[in-house]
Image (cartoon, rainbow, N blue to C red; front, top):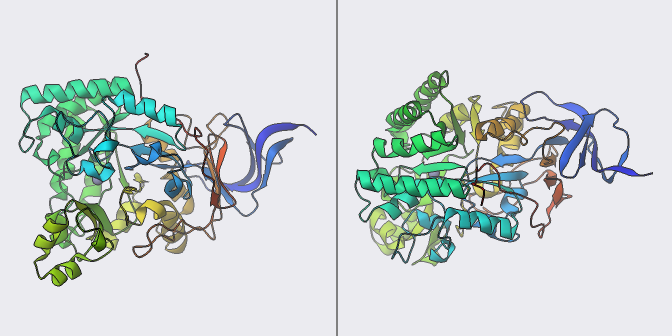
Amino acid sequence: MTATSEIMIRNARLFDGTGAAAVVRDLSVADGIITAIGRDLPGTAAQEMDGSGLALAPGFIDVHTHDDAMVLQPGGMEPKLSQGVTSVVTGNCGICLAPGLPEGASVPTPPLDLLGDAAAFRFPEFGDFIDALHGSGPEVNVFPLVGQTLLRLRAMDRPGRPATAAEVERMREDLARAIAGGAAGLSTGLAYPPARFASTDEILALARDVAAAGLLWTTHMRDERSGVVSAVAETLDIARRSGVRTLISHHKCCSQAAFGLSRTTLAMIEEARKELSVGLDLYPYTASSTVLLPTFARDSTKVTVTWSDPHPEMEGRDLKDIAAEWGVSQDEALERLKPGGAIYHQMDEGDLRRIMAYPPTLIGSDGLPQDRRPHPRLWGTFPRVLGHFARDEAVLPLETAIAKMTGQTAALLGLKDRGLLKPGCKADLVLFDPEQVIDRASYAEPTLPPAGIRQVWVNGAPVVEDGAYRPGRPGAGTVIGGCRAAA
Ligand SMILES: [Zn+2]
């Protein structure tokens, strides 16, 4: 008998990514494209799979990552592929690897250093980063954003103040070159210095250029603590005045004074969505993670060090214990540990669940792959939503959870041929056991792969087989979403 397609998955519970309830169907793939979906599809395939009792979904899209360096590493994407993630949005929170560091800078200014050391920032132009991606053959599909913090540092000699008109012009020129080089949008990280010194007008000028190019703006807002309501207001103001497609990154309410404010922020977003294209995403944990920042530490019930260049022996330990051991204040201990990063326990589960259940909310990991003891969100986000929050806690139906990782995400990113199971779409697929799927990565053991993810394909190429990541599949993924000028 001749094979009529490369992959045939039979009798799986098919979640098509739209949020519709599952139906039992067969699905076939040829040349990296879904060719047919139906009952008892005729023909055979080189790879025949029995999907009975398993869920088949579009490959998950991690809408918020810092995988800029990891996507360039051969075999580097295990943390994502093992979760069923087949596409990642890089360059979030204002930070990215290209264009290069400002002239004369020998080390990346925090928070750029979340992505790596100076050697990682080796691309003079954004297009060089895209060329390197094509050259290395990424294991996943990459939707690359350019970060405003890097553009700002390149444009300003003293970035601890609002930019002048001439400096904003320099950022706009850099942005235009990055877009021509293949950037799929712009990100900002206004909570951190040096970007937090940017005025609303500085961001608005850049947002207008992004809107004119038809691209996406993602923003780590200026305040995610007691000022989160005014930060949402600023974001919506920029979205309204620029017309830019907007995504609020990792929406959360940190510190006790902010607990419950998600009721207000979600109502504001809901109202704005009547006339604007505004989305939001979330990671499913009540602890955040970033570089060492005293304001974050003061608002947290517990702070765990994820990396420290001067004191690597303190990685994985609590700041309070380190301070006691050194006989200094927590602020002083934090200063001594710099440069470094931490996990901050500072959110309320009620806000987390409310934001997760809000229909427009997408799922993004915000994982930090360069951290030596990373936040477990890097390895656990997607199975945690599916297994813990959808199945065990019933915070949302499974088909809704899947749509927040697939079809809804693709719609926000403007991807027409991903995120859905339908003939003609790219064969980014994940086959998983809905009874077994669960995250195993924890704060104590942050790099454990999840359980229950059986098979993953990127553009039809198998990258996880029988629950095990298969390294060495370069070129399975591709660069998506930009509008690169013809060379
Ligand atoms: Zn962020």
